Image (cartoon, rainbow, N blue to C red; front, side):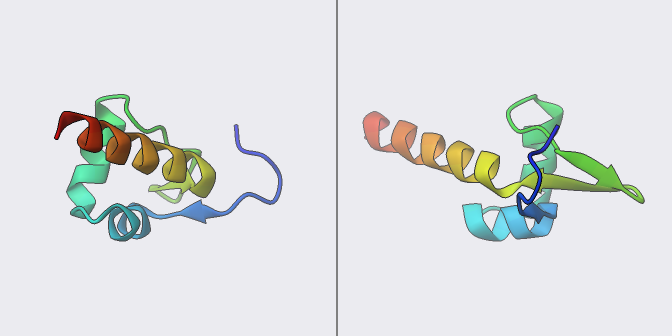
Length: 66
């Protein structure tokens, strides 16, 4: 459930912010790494705040691995 007034992003917008292909975003969702906030007419929408936290956690993990 999303909070009132939160920004929703399409998979393409998430991909652009994360620097990955759109299909990668769908894989993240399928694998349970990133949940869609809602679906409208078959289009999955993601909460921008949740996306930002997920991207930050991936970047932190990459830094720690190097």
